[in-house]
Length: 496
Image (cartoon, rainbow, N blue to C red; front, side):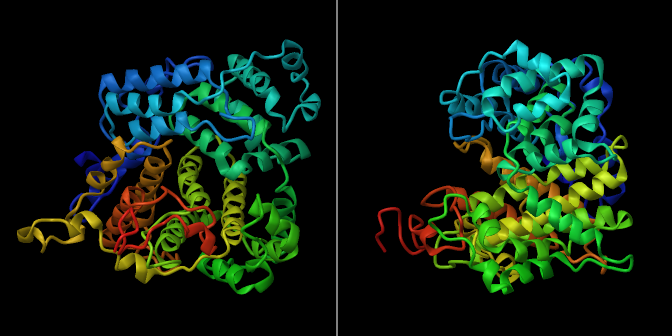
């Protein structure tokens, strides 16, 4: 596990190896030459952004499990649209160094409740060859197998990169592409996470799954994304976007926006758009990224997503055991895709900028939807990791910074859930890496800085799911969301 520190988390003594890290962000074609639109193939060398060493056994197990999921399971595990997380789970485990038995355990814990794959409708697949007909089927999960087969067939004659460009990332904007992009950011960013996995591991089959998942999601966030973009584009050429923490503060300070969602709302993001759309668009319209600042703003976005999620876990109800918000967590888990996107020379620069702007706008809207929880860097900086509290007396002088991030995150390899925890740990590791470059750059406002603070974040992630109560809280700005979380002075039975 030391390879993570060496390759992804360069210190002052290993900074010269950074060039090697960047090269690993662009895996050689030998890593995925055996992968096809119908076959998943993961090699031991292709471990994603962490670039950790892996074994042939683990790579074969990951390939087998992902192939089984592709062939046997639907993208939603129920008819309410709850997502199948198996691809993200397996790849997050594999990409952080988990062994084959941990991969199998993670799969077995979640395969049993998945819906079986449905047969495609051949006539629909034929109709989709003329994309104008797609509007009849978009947004309907019934047609997921048809979109999956359609995109797989598209990749028989084109590279997966060309197919993604054609339907999502092309520079020439049109209504059809805009509609698909909106759907990419729907469903609490799950289509984005699926695409992240396919792109990061260069797996055509998983990319096809992602495109099909995009197609069957709704587009009700279209007014937010397109109207705020229009407002941003009306800014003059001298406009400079504020620091992201200032925009989060603007959301919190707007009383109508901050009070728009109610705990009783089944979908709180929709509630924000129903009750305070103009206010949300006004803040989101202040997001305008200049091409020359793409890399810096990506680091700022990722850092801010971790900061908001970590703060909310600690600062909202400090007497409680820390718990991450289920929805804010997805905005961290999806963020590694923007590292992959920025390093893809086949994606137009204007598309990269647009994708990042949309992500920032969704981050701000989700913060409003979770009832603007309290934010505090002091709570993060002063967090006392639980495992360090329990060290023997002779070890009590051990400093937080002495703990290796990988040693912390690897505790999640055996954690029984649907993969959200290890995805959060992995994403935080990537955030640390891309933030480090800009820690001394005064032009970038990063709230989380320094190895010691980042290591506290890693401990916080693991401690939060190991603590009593539910793994996550939902809509952490509301007191009701914390009812099942015990106070830190109580045990599981509520005894002091």
